[in-house]
Structures are given as C-alpha cells and as structure tokens.
Image 1 (cartoon, rainbow, N blue to C red):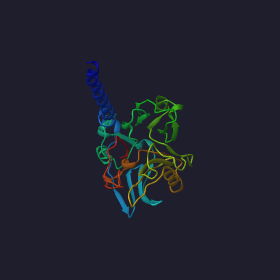
Image 2: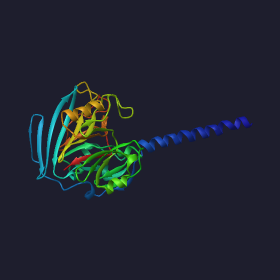
Image 3: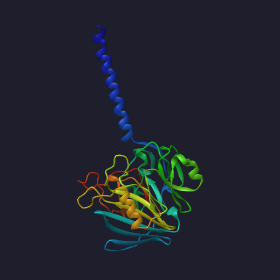
Image 4: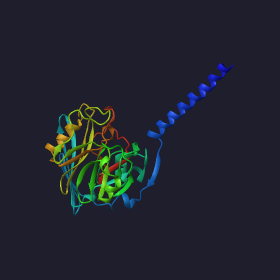
Length: 299
C-alpha cells in the first residue's frame, strides 16, 4: 500500500516542478512588469521641425540651431554599415526612452514605435535593460537601477559635460556615477574603444552570440561630435561584423576616441525621419524589427 501511494505523491511533485520552471521562464522572458511610468517631460524634448536634404547615401539634417545629423552608408568587410554623425553643442541632446514610457521588465516595443512616440528624428535600439535583472540603468540623469551585474561588467557612462567613459561596475556604484554627473549609463557591452585604441580581442563575443552579427554601437569622435552605428547582418547581402571588426571600423573609418557595444542581433535598428534605415533581422529569412525595451535618440 505504501508503494502505491508514492506514485501520486511523486506525480504531484513533478507537476509542481514543471509549473515552477514554466513560471520562471515566463517571468524572465514574457511577463511584463512595470516598475515606474516615466512622464513625457523626463523622456523627450519638444518636437522640432526637421528640414532635410539628401544626395545618394548621404543625408544631412539641421535639427535646430545647435544640432546637426549626417547619415552615411558604408560597406565594410562584406557588411552594410549605417553611420549617423551627430554634431551637438550639448551632450544632453543624446536622449534615451523606454518602451511605452515605462521602466520595467519585459516591457517592449519596436524601435520605430518608441522613436515615433518620442518625436525622435534619429534613433537606435539601446541596451535592452529590461531583459535583465541587473546592470546599472541611468537614463536622462535619473537612476532607475543600482544593482550591479558583476564586478567585471563594463558600462558606458555619458557625463553631462560630454565625457564618454567605460567603467567597471565593481569600481564604482551607480549612485556615485549620478553624483559625478552621469547623464546616461548603458550596461550591455563590452567596451569597444578607449582613448582611440581597440579594446576587444579577435574572437571576443557577447555571450553565445555568433561571430558575425548585426551590431549597434555608440561612440564619441571629439567634443560635440558623436556617432550612432548600426550594421546589417545574417543575410547574403550583408554578412555582419565581429566585435573586433566593429571596433576597428569605428577607429579607422570614423576616428572615434571611445565606443561601446549596445544590444545587437535582431535588435539592431536605426530609425531616421520616421523610417527604418537598415534591414533588421533575427534569422536572415525575414526583414522585421524585434521589439526592444529602450532606445537612444535625438529630436
């Protein structure tokens, strides 16, 4: 009799374990959790008029009296790369926004949708903070997450004075960064370029990422001159870049002094004047935006 009773008990434990595992997966990747709703004033500036002129693959836009964007298309190592040169007197023109104006977990939308809701002229996907529980999150000068992703986690800090610096979370707290004037802190990584020198080794990759991928990066060339970079990949027309190739492109072709890798793969998207510039894809079979949790943009 005792042996006969063990099976129902075992079945109950097994069912409970499956249910718990399913919940963990759903909680990690599917269930949306909003921790804070961000007001419009915190995430965007007033909409500007965007007159533009274009010539082939070169577009220049004067967004206002102090900000200018020049968009160019390059071919590098069999890969199409889109570069937006941004000239701005004030680095706080580089803004960030959350999907649905909500800071939370698994709250996502297409880059183009977030850009449109924030009246963005130019936008790229961000660091997809909302798919992780850790890693510093500072957006537009506001500290949202202070939990460290580990002592070796490399973050990009954009300070209000225009300085770009790659730091390790083990060396400084998020609050200390804000107190020192951090405007944006991104925690994807790794850093690509510091002091004009490539800092990633050939073969170095993000987690289980493929060697050649669509990529998104942000960098600084000089005071008042910044770049957004997005490359296509995973298609016959555009192979994609390794991290070391991306870093080399940004140093040799763009002359950056500091550069940082943001979320890539199917997330890599650039939006300009309400249109998607590149060809985002997750598997190479279809061109389609992947939803992301945040963007970096200018009005």
